[in-house]
Length: 218
Image 1 (cartoon, rainbow, N blue to C red):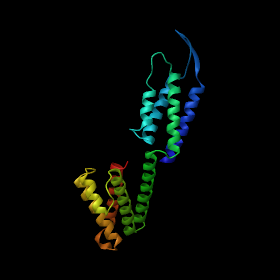
Image 2 (cartoon, rainbow, N blue to C red):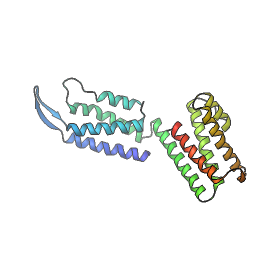
Image 3 (cartoon, helix red, strand yellow):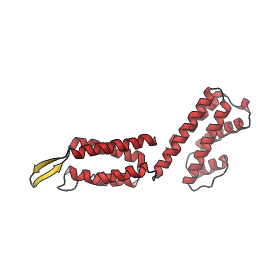
Image 4 (cartoon, helix red, strand yellow):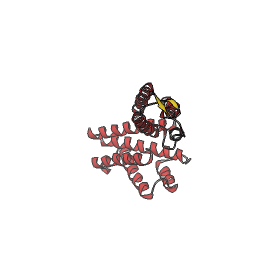
C-alpha cells in the first residue's frame, strides 16, 4: 500500500508538470493571461485530493490546505490556482515519502497485519491449524495494544485490554465477546490442546481478526 501511494504521488507529480508545461496565453477583457487546460486540471485535482485523503488522512492539514487552495478567487485564472496547489501537493508528497506522517505508520502496521494474516491462512491450508491460530491471535493482541495506545489505556493481558477497550466504548460488548472467543482458540492452540478447536474454527477466527482490523484500525 505504501509503495502504491508513493508511486501514485510520483505519477501525479508528472501529470501536473505536463499540465503546467502546456499552459498557453489567452486574451481577456483585462489583457493577456496564462491558463491551462481546464478539464485536465480538474481531473488532476480530483485524483490528487483522493490520494492526499488516503495517504495523509481525511482530517489532515494537507487535505484541508488543498481544499482551501483550490477555491477560486475573484478575477484569477486556473493557472494561478495550479500554482497554489503545486507546493501543497509537493509538501504532502515529501512528508509521505519521508515517513513523517502518522498515516504512514498506520499503513506500515496494516501491511504487517495483512502479511501475518496471509501467513496464518497459508499455515491453515498446509494443515497446521495450531500455528495458524497462534499467529492470528498475535495479530489480534497487537491490534488491541495499538487501540489501547490511541485511547491512553495501559497495556495488559489480552482479556484486560479487551475489557478496557469495550468499557471505553471503542467497540461493543458483542465485539468483546467475539474477541474473547478468538483468544480462547489462540490459548488452546498455544497449549497444544488441538481437540478443542477445528480447522473451520481457525478459518473463522482469521476472518474475524481481519474484519476487526478493517473496522477499527483502517
